[in-house]
Image (tube, rainbow over all chains, first blue to last red; front, side):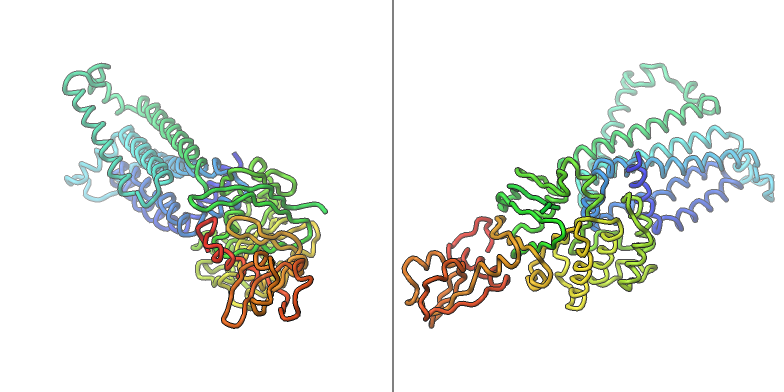
Length: 244
Length: 294
């Protein structure tokens, strides 16, 4: 665990010079929008956290980290695992901040202070502050989607190389589209999850209530964590067969 | 004498290149120059020592520990300098210190910054802007700040100006003053080896051509010159890198074979550089090379 934390710290210090300013800017913009106009915009802070992860492979290539990894007294497996836990931690901490601001935003409802309360725009603003569960749902879903996507891409880039990024993206999008098309076909022919398991819009609408949204969000977080760990394990296993 | 590094029967194949049963050892308290022409297998051997390359056969022991099974314990006590910087180039020395510090249990921040100031390195400038000599000094400062007992340097002087090379050799001489330490120093600039090494291992086409003390090596071979007609019968086959000119020949000869030579043939002490040149010529004479290299 100590080694994993050291590697996470190493990655954070590597990416910080590229990430901090941009993150603060995005966060400030989203918080301002979230507090006054639409709490849902708080979910977009997660995109501001991307520079804490995305430059790492480029820096590693440019700065010849393969040699560094061969020199430091940390096992290669822990170096790889550390990167995936770091990815989860970056987005998870961002998500926590988003949740905190979402709660503050819905509690304070600062849109009350805005002028022209009766304008058409303000009708939308009022509506945006009505459903806290929806805000949290978007935060959870966006966090999970971004975290899993970034961890997946990290795995693919580490295994197949950054030079194959375009091919990896194309193949991944095609596979995702294929799965989605198959799912749609199943639903249309009456064999899909919604039909088979009796999930209908009534159940989906339960997510509009906090008592259902929060367990759903926790489940998404656990899924994201498990997938990050699995991707890390697969990557570590594949890389351990290679030389530095 | 206790060995700080022992390599026994190291074999490793990379496509059409292979290390063939590389065996040598470095006793504590000494500097070993690890020489050979480009592509002779020096870097592959060093990568094997660092467990960066997987070996096919053989064993490597560092501080008496296995380089693969005990790799973490070994790396705690190892300082490594490569020919190029392996640290994040966009960070400053201060930021790098914060990054590297947790890796080593015996990291000494004061010692690190003492070295940085001694080497005259700016601590707030990004290290990517440093000259090659400055980057080399930075890697040495890292290696010296966690109490490394063995320093491994892979071609550290290549591309350095004479002043920077001289400084580096002085640092190594100062480092080895502690007799519990050792230095393995790979280079193809043999003048550096002649200046500071106690032991020399010459690698050629993936094989150890010589390993022993520097004095043994320099006393073991000589350059023989003269007219070919004066060569006694049977000696021609013993010569290494025989090269005939219009007025005579030149070749490397073992000093054991010097006895009983005619006065018409002259010989002089061979430098390590000359030895490398003659063993490369010998390959050409034989018309082949084991690793498809000259």
